[in-house]
Length: 459
Image (cartoon, rainbow, N blue to C red):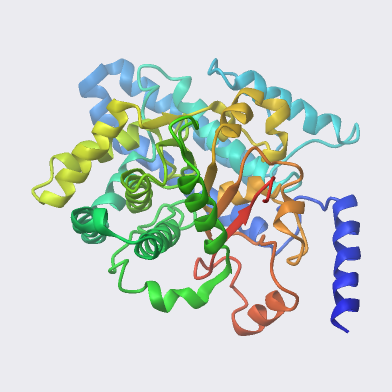
């Protein structure tokens, strides 16, 4: 019986591999994508307009009447964008001169070419991934086209508020790291493993603090992030922690003076509390020599409300350094030193804010793919990265993660994600059906999570 089921599952996998499913889209009325485009995206746009308007006085004080005129024009462009969205207008090309504009317009042309002569890409017909990314890029265009306010971050206020609202939780994890540092030299391998597992879970659940999902409403970490870990373990639907640990520890054991440095990459998601948990995990990996260098990948522009930019990273470190709490200021100083020493490296390749799924990377951003190929392990944080890893497609829940990656294998990779979009692969047979019976919102509530690993060259 088991052999027959396995054979049937293998045939289903092969069939799915041949037939790549359609992307998620707002054309499916009632779907999470539809509700996002219909309700959540207009709300985010409205908040962006309001934020720009509330800074009118600041713009006047800084730039005079020229700043006020720029504010009016930016609001006009965002209001026009909101109207286009709500009335399902056709996608239009970008007109700014940011370095990614040509790639965006090429992508839009590709989408048009794939349709019939009477059809056009639009908000409620095209893929959800394309349209959601396009909205944030058009918000950025609205600001770029209006100097002298062209470096204004419309989401900065929300990100700063989220950081300060999470102060107690940030203090707890930074204090824990400081205490860990004092005794880590004497740890046995089993103790290192336990601490790694704990800090990886802290970084995992930190992903719940996502302002794009809450429509910009406060979604900070207010509870003790360490106290709840044990009770949350049953909500991790796929847990490949052991495989991740085995990869790291084997690289560590096999390291010699001749081997290249062990490199871990973290493709970041949200700023605020989640970013701090990522930095804590990165510092632990470095201080235990499980990694020799950490490469962070953030966004080159304000993105999905709370995604991390270089400005957010620098702001976070400066605020930690200025804190009256010793553990916060020490973390801020140590992390800043790591960046200066070059053992932490920050990248913000333009590909991360394009609408492409990651299986396109080797063709559309070969330099980034080659850079990731140098890594020994890549952590991909959060929902948007997972959607791009899997192409944001209507995969069967039981299809393997490797299949859904569609050939994207630059290095061993691990998704750390709390579920806030209706896509999830790699589940056991009937697991999704059982979850739907017990919690119909399991895919989008943020209450469930995955630690999902893929290795292109398993030993």
